Image (cartoon, rainbow, N blue to C red; front, side):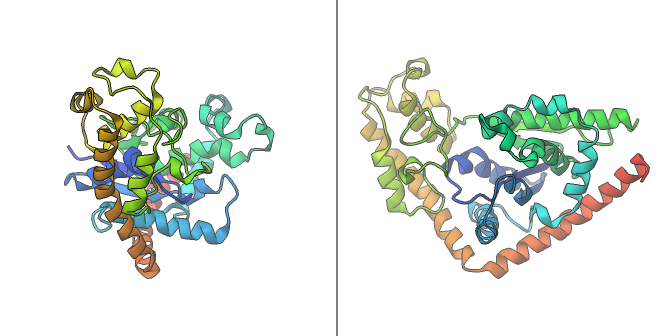
Length: 333
Protein backbone atom coordinates (compact mmCIF):
# COMPACT_ATOMS: atom_id res chain seq x y z
CA UNK A 1 0.00 0.00 0.00
CA UNK A 2 1.42 3.40 -0.99
CA UNK A 3 2.11 5.98 1.68
CA UNK A 4 2.36 9.76 1.46
CA UNK A 5 5.23 10.66 3.76
CA UNK A 6 6.04 14.12 5.14
CA UNK A 7 8.81 14.95 7.56
CA UNK A 8 11.24 17.76 8.24
CA UNK A 9 14.53 18.62 9.91
CA UNK A 10 15.46 21.99 11.37
CA UNK A 11 18.54 23.60 9.79
CA UNK A 12 20.32 24.33 13.04
CA UNK A 13 23.75 23.06 11.94
CA UNK A 14 26.03 20.26 13.12
CA UNK A 15 23.65 17.38 12.46
CA UNK A 16 24.86 14.40 14.46
CA UNK A 17 24.45 10.67 14.92
CA UNK A 18 21.23 11.16 16.91
CA UNK A 19 19.69 13.04 13.96
CA UNK A 20 20.86 10.35 11.55
CA UNK A 21 19.69 7.29 13.48
CA UNK A 22 16.56 9.00 14.81
CA UNK A 23 15.34 10.50 11.54
CA UNK A 24 17.48 10.62 8.40
CA UNK A 25 18.28 6.88 8.21
CA UNK A 26 14.54 6.24 8.35
CA UNK A 27 13.93 8.85 5.61
CA UNK A 28 16.34 6.99 3.33
CA UNK A 29 14.55 3.69 3.91
CA UNK A 30 11.17 5.30 3.18
CA UNK A 31 12.59 6.97 0.05
CA UNK A 32 13.83 3.58 -1.18
CA UNK A 33 10.41 1.92 -0.92
CA UNK A 34 9.00 2.13 -4.46
CA UNK A 35 5.39 2.77 -3.57
CA UNK A 36 6.04 5.71 -1.24
CA UNK A 37 5.62 9.38 -2.16
CA UNK A 38 7.99 11.28 0.10
CA UNK A 39 8.39 14.97 0.92
CA UNK A 40 11.36 15.95 3.07
CA UNK A 41 11.41 19.53 4.23
CA UNK A 42 14.19 21.71 5.60
CA UNK A 43 11.99 23.48 8.15
CA UNK A 44 13.73 26.85 8.23
CA UNK A 45 10.63 28.67 9.53
CA UNK A 46 10.76 26.49 12.63
CA UNK A 47 14.44 27.34 13.10
CA UNK A 48 13.73 31.04 13.68
CA UNK A 49 11.73 30.39 16.86
CA UNK A 50 15.12 31.23 18.36
CA UNK A 51 17.40 33.99 17.04
CA UNK A 52 19.54 32.99 14.06
CA UNK A 53 22.51 34.57 12.31
CA UNK A 54 21.34 35.05 8.70
CA UNK A 55 24.55 33.85 7.05
CA UNK A 56 24.82 30.84 9.33
CA UNK A 57 21.14 29.99 8.76
CA UNK A 58 21.63 29.99 5.00
CA UNK A 59 24.68 27.72 5.35
CA UNK A 60 22.72 25.40 7.64
CA UNK A 61 19.86 25.17 5.10
CA UNK A 62 22.32 24.05 2.43
CA UNK A 63 24.05 21.65 4.82
CA UNK A 64 20.77 20.02 5.87
CA UNK A 65 19.76 19.51 2.23
CA UNK A 66 23.26 18.19 1.48
CA UNK A 67 22.94 15.77 4.40
CA UNK A 68 19.65 14.42 3.03
CA UNK A 69 21.26 13.75 -0.33
CA UNK A 70 24.59 12.47 1.04
CA UNK A 71 22.72 10.02 3.28
CA UNK A 72 20.97 8.50 0.28
CA UNK A 73 17.71 10.39 -0.32
CA UNK A 74 17.19 10.65 -4.07
CA UNK A 75 16.10 14.24 -4.87
CA UNK A 76 14.63 13.05 -8.17
CA UNK A 77 12.38 10.48 -6.47
CA UNK A 78 11.44 12.48 -3.36
CA UNK A 79 10.72 16.19 -2.97
CA UNK A 80 13.35 18.11 -1.00
CA UNK A 81 12.68 21.79 -0.32
CA UNK A 82 12.98 24.48 2.31
CA UNK A 83 9.77 25.50 4.01
CA UNK A 84 10.08 29.29 3.67
CA UNK A 85 9.88 29.01 -0.15
CA UNK A 86 6.25 27.79 0.03
CA UNK A 87 4.02 30.54 1.44
CA UNK A 88 1.05 28.22 1.97
CA UNK A 89 2.72 26.88 5.12
CA UNK A 90 2.39 30.18 6.99
CA UNK A 91 -0.98 31.03 5.44
CA UNK A 92 -2.52 27.74 6.51
CA UNK A 93 -0.83 27.97 9.90
CA UNK A 94 -2.75 31.22 10.58
CA UNK A 95 -6.04 29.58 9.64
CA UNK A 96 -5.34 26.64 11.95
CA UNK A 97 -4.24 29.02 14.73
CA UNK A 98 -7.70 30.62 14.64
CA UNK A 99 -9.42 27.32 15.39
CA UNK A 100 -6.94 25.62 17.76
CA UNK A 101 -7.84 26.01 21.48
CA UNK A 102 -5.09 27.47 23.67
CA UNK A 103 -5.65 24.63 26.11
CA UNK A 104 -4.32 22.18 23.53
CA UNK A 105 -1.09 24.18 23.19
CA UNK A 106 -0.76 24.55 26.96
CA UNK A 107 -0.43 20.77 27.19
CA UNK A 108 2.64 20.69 24.91
CA UNK A 109 5.48 19.61 27.18
CA UNK A 110 8.25 20.50 24.72
CA UNK A 111 7.46 24.23 25.01
CA UNK A 112 7.81 23.99 28.78
CA UNK A 113 11.16 22.22 28.41
CA UNK A 114 12.55 24.63 25.80
CA UNK A 115 11.22 27.82 27.40
CA UNK A 116 12.50 26.85 30.84
CA UNK A 117 11.67 28.84 33.94
CA UNK A 118 11.53 32.20 32.16
CA UNK A 119 8.77 31.32 29.69
CA UNK A 120 7.54 34.94 29.62
CA UNK A 121 10.61 35.77 27.51
CA UNK A 122 10.10 32.90 25.06
CA UNK A 123 8.83 33.84 21.60
CA UNK A 124 5.21 33.37 20.54
CA UNK A 125 6.66 31.37 17.63
CA UNK A 126 8.11 28.78 20.03
CA UNK A 127 4.69 28.48 21.68
CA UNK A 128 2.65 28.07 18.49
CA UNK A 129 5.13 26.21 16.30
CA UNK A 130 3.23 22.89 16.72
CA UNK A 131 0.44 24.55 14.69
CA UNK A 132 2.92 25.37 11.92
CA UNK A 133 4.03 21.74 12.08
CA UNK A 134 0.39 20.70 11.62
CA UNK A 135 0.05 22.92 8.57
CA UNK A 136 3.27 21.44 7.13
CA UNK A 137 1.83 17.94 7.33
CA UNK A 138 -1.84 18.57 6.49
CA UNK A 139 -1.15 20.64 3.35
CA UNK A 140 0.22 17.56 1.59
CA UNK A 141 -2.42 15.01 2.64
CA UNK A 142 0.35 13.04 4.35
CA UNK A 143 -0.83 9.62 5.44
CA UNK A 144 2.25 8.85 7.55
CA UNK A 145 4.78 10.91 9.48
CA UNK A 146 8.03 9.48 10.87
CA UNK A 147 8.38 10.75 14.44
CA UNK A 148 10.64 10.30 17.42
CA UNK A 149 9.66 10.41 21.08
CA UNK A 150 10.01 14.19 21.25
CA UNK A 151 7.50 14.81 18.43
CA UNK A 152 4.81 12.21 19.19
CA UNK A 153 2.77 14.72 21.21
CA UNK A 154 2.91 17.25 18.37
CA UNK A 155 1.68 14.68 15.86
CA UNK A 156 -1.22 13.87 18.19
CA UNK A 157 -2.03 17.61 18.15
CA UNK A 158 -1.91 17.56 14.33
CA UNK A 159 -4.40 14.69 14.31
CA UNK A 160 -6.70 16.57 16.72
CA UNK A 161 -6.51 19.74 14.62
CA UNK A 162 -7.34 17.84 11.41
CA UNK A 163 -10.37 16.19 13.01
CA UNK A 164 -11.59 19.49 14.48
CA UNK A 165 -11.27 21.27 11.12
CA UNK A 166 -13.22 18.51 9.36
CA UNK A 167 -15.95 18.65 12.02
CA UNK A 168 -16.11 22.47 12.27
CA UNK A 169 -16.51 22.89 8.51
CA UNK A 170 -18.56 19.74 7.94
CA UNK A 171 -16.04 18.32 5.46
CA UNK A 172 -15.44 14.75 6.57
CA UNK A 173 -12.00 13.34 5.60
CA UNK A 174 -10.95 16.57 3.85
CA UNK A 175 -7.86 16.94 6.01
CA UNK A 176 -6.22 13.54 6.20
CA UNK A 177 -5.49 12.33 9.74
CA UNK A 178 -1.88 11.12 9.57
CA UNK A 179 -0.51 8.01 11.23
CA UNK A 180 2.83 8.00 13.07
CA UNK A 181 5.72 5.89 11.83
CA UNK A 182 7.67 4.85 14.91
CA UNK A 183 11.12 3.34 14.41
CA UNK A 184 11.66 -0.16 15.73
CA UNK A 185 15.05 -1.41 16.92
CA UNK A 186 15.99 2.15 17.84
CA UNK A 187 17.35 3.51 21.08
CA UNK A 188 17.33 7.21 21.87
CA UNK A 189 20.87 8.44 21.26
CA UNK A 190 22.47 9.98 24.31
CA UNK A 191 25.69 11.93 24.89
CA UNK A 192 28.94 9.94 24.67
CA UNK A 193 30.06 11.74 27.85
CA UNK A 194 26.83 11.46 29.87
CA UNK A 195 24.32 8.68 29.21
CA UNK A 196 21.53 10.64 30.91
CA UNK A 197 21.70 13.60 28.52
CA UNK A 198 20.46 13.56 24.93
CA UNK A 199 23.17 13.85 22.25
CA UNK A 200 23.09 17.52 21.27
CA UNK A 201 24.93 19.98 19.10
CA UNK A 202 24.72 22.52 21.91
CA UNK A 203 26.86 20.43 24.26
CA UNK A 204 30.14 22.34 24.76
CA UNK A 205 32.17 19.14 24.41
CA UNK A 206 32.65 18.00 20.81
CA UNK A 207 33.53 14.56 22.23
CA UNK A 208 29.90 14.18 23.37
CA UNK A 209 28.61 13.54 19.85
CA UNK A 210 29.41 12.04 16.47
CA UNK A 211 28.87 14.82 13.91
CA UNK A 212 27.81 13.76 10.43
CA UNK A 213 30.76 15.81 9.14
CA UNK A 214 33.33 13.96 11.31
CA UNK A 215 36.24 12.18 9.67
CA UNK A 216 36.88 8.45 10.12
CA UNK A 217 39.70 9.15 12.59
CA UNK A 218 37.52 11.55 14.59
CA UNK A 219 34.73 8.96 14.88
CA UNK A 220 37.13 6.24 16.06
CA UNK A 221 38.69 8.61 18.61
CA UNK A 222 35.30 9.70 20.02
CA UNK A 223 34.08 6.12 20.45
CA UNK A 224 37.39 5.17 22.07
CA UNK A 225 36.95 8.01 24.61
CA UNK A 226 33.21 7.45 25.16
CA UNK A 227 32.23 7.03 28.80
CA UNK A 228 31.43 3.49 30.01
CA UNK A 229 31.58 1.73 33.37
CA UNK A 230 33.74 -0.94 34.94
CA UNK A 231 31.28 -3.84 34.70
CA UNK A 232 31.15 -6.44 31.88
CA UNK A 233 28.39 -6.41 29.28
CA UNK A 234 25.35 -8.25 30.69
CA UNK A 235 23.15 -10.88 29.07
CA UNK A 236 19.80 -9.23 29.86
CA UNK A 237 18.39 -5.76 29.11
CA UNK A 238 17.03 -5.33 32.65
CA UNK A 239 20.60 -5.46 33.99
CA UNK A 240 21.31 -2.19 32.14
CA UNK A 241 18.74 -0.29 34.22
CA UNK A 242 21.24 1.79 36.22
CA UNK A 243 23.99 1.81 33.58
CA UNK A 244 23.07 4.68 31.19
CA UNK A 245 26.43 4.90 29.36
CA UNK A 246 26.55 1.15 28.78
CA UNK A 247 22.95 1.14 27.55
CA UNK A 248 23.68 4.07 25.23
CA UNK A 249 26.65 2.44 23.45
CA UNK A 250 24.80 -0.87 23.13
CA UNK A 251 21.74 1.02 21.84
CA UNK A 252 23.82 2.87 19.23
CA UNK A 253 25.33 -0.43 18.08
CA UNK A 254 21.84 -1.99 17.84
CA UNK A 255 20.39 0.96 15.91
CA UNK A 256 23.20 1.18 13.37
CA UNK A 257 23.19 -2.63 12.96
CA UNK A 258 19.38 -2.81 12.52
CA UNK A 259 19.00 -5.35 15.28
CA UNK A 260 17.33 -5.61 18.68
CA UNK A 261 19.16 -4.73 21.87
CA UNK A 262 18.63 -8.35 22.94
CA UNK A 263 20.55 -9.62 19.91
CA UNK A 264 23.38 -7.17 20.63
CA UNK A 265 23.57 -8.37 24.24
CA UNK A 266 23.81 -11.96 23.02
CA UNK A 267 26.63 -10.92 20.69
CA UNK A 268 28.69 -9.20 23.40
CA UNK A 269 27.57 -11.06 26.54
CA UNK A 270 30.47 -11.27 29.02
CA UNK A 271 32.87 -9.31 26.82
CA UNK A 272 34.62 -6.10 27.78
CA UNK A 273 33.61 -2.67 26.51
CA UNK A 274 36.86 -2.49 24.58
CA UNK A 275 35.46 -5.23 22.29
CA UNK A 276 32.19 -3.32 21.80
CA UNK A 277 33.97 0.00 21.24
CA UNK A 278 36.32 -1.52 18.67
CA UNK A 279 33.45 -3.02 16.68
CA UNK A 280 31.22 0.05 17.07
CA UNK A 281 33.99 2.40 15.90
CA UNK A 282 34.48 0.21 12.85
CA UNK A 283 30.85 0.06 11.74
CA UNK A 284 30.17 3.71 12.58
CA UNK A 285 33.19 5.01 10.67
CA UNK A 286 32.26 2.79 7.71
CA UNK A 287 28.71 4.22 7.78
CA UNK A 288 29.30 7.89 8.65
CA UNK A 289 32.61 8.84 7.00
CA UNK A 290 31.30 8.33 3.42
CA UNK A 291 28.33 10.57 4.31
CA UNK A 292 30.74 13.13 5.76
CA UNK A 293 32.86 13.10 2.60
CA UNK A 294 29.79 13.52 0.38
CA UNK A 295 28.42 16.40 2.49
CA UNK A 296 31.72 18.25 2.10
CA UNK A 297 31.68 17.65 -1.65
CA UNK A 298 28.09 18.87 -1.99
CA UNK A 299 28.76 21.96 0.15
CA UNK A 300 31.35 23.01 -2.41
CA UNK A 301 28.59 23.08 -5.06
CA UNK A 302 25.98 25.55 -3.76
CA UNK A 303 24.47 25.88 -7.24
CA UNK A 304 23.55 22.18 -7.24
CA UNK A 305 21.93 22.45 -3.79
CA UNK A 306 20.08 25.63 -4.79
CA UNK A 307 18.73 23.92 -7.92
CA UNK A 308 17.52 20.90 -5.91
CA UNK A 309 15.78 23.14 -3.35
CA UNK A 310 14.22 25.33 -6.06
CA UNK A 311 12.89 22.37 -8.02
CA UNK A 312 11.57 20.82 -4.82
CA UNK A 313 9.91 24.10 -3.76
CA UNK A 314 8.19 24.41 -7.14
CA UNK A 315 6.78 20.89 -6.83
CA UNK A 316 5.74 21.42 -3.20
CA UNK A 317 4.18 24.80 -4.00
CA UNK A 318 2.03 23.27 -6.75
CA UNK A 319 0.62 20.69 -4.31
CA UNK A 320 0.20 23.15 -1.43
CA UNK A 321 -1.47 25.90 -3.49
CA UNK A 322 -4.02 23.45 -4.86
CA UNK A 323 -4.88 22.43 -1.30
CA UNK A 324 -5.05 26.06 -0.17
CA UNK A 325 -7.62 26.89 -2.86
CA UNK A 326 -9.82 24.08 -1.55
CA UNK A 327 -9.30 25.25 2.05
CA UNK A 328 -10.27 28.83 1.20
CA UNK A 329 -13.39 27.64 -0.60
CA UNK A 330 -14.41 25.59 2.45
CA UNK A 331 -13.83 28.54 4.81
CA UNK A 332 -15.60 31.08 2.59
CA UNK A 333 -12.70 33.26 1.45
